[in-house]
Image (cartoon, rainbow, N blue to C red; front, side, top):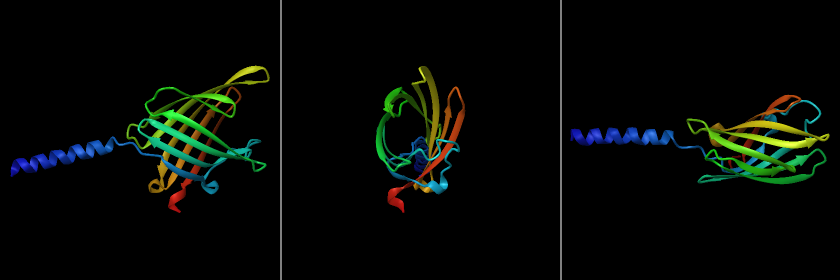
Length: 168
């Protein structure tokens, strides 16, 4: 009987350890919550923002379909595909190639998408790097994306909050 109790305790520890390695799943439809988001100040404020995202996370793949809405009300959809294993992925976004890698936090509760974009501006090649930290909030009912952008001219940061569509 004592041996069975020891085995049960050991199995409990193993299950807890394995559960700690589980990574969150960001899948779902997410709608922008403007009140909880902080848009950057300046001339780009309100120019274009992601109003809705549909995220599919399955096995080693992450697909993000983003619906942008411009100031004049036009909507445009951009789909990006990533791998969750840290390998480089290239997507075209707004007529610019974006090379990205995803890094999971050690606890598996958040991920960071590190990206580089190179584009032409006034005849010169410009490189912009960005970092987007994704984490779930409100028991999985919210998605917080904290972004930092670095360009030769300036650095910017913003926080965008999305509500899960099926939890309202």
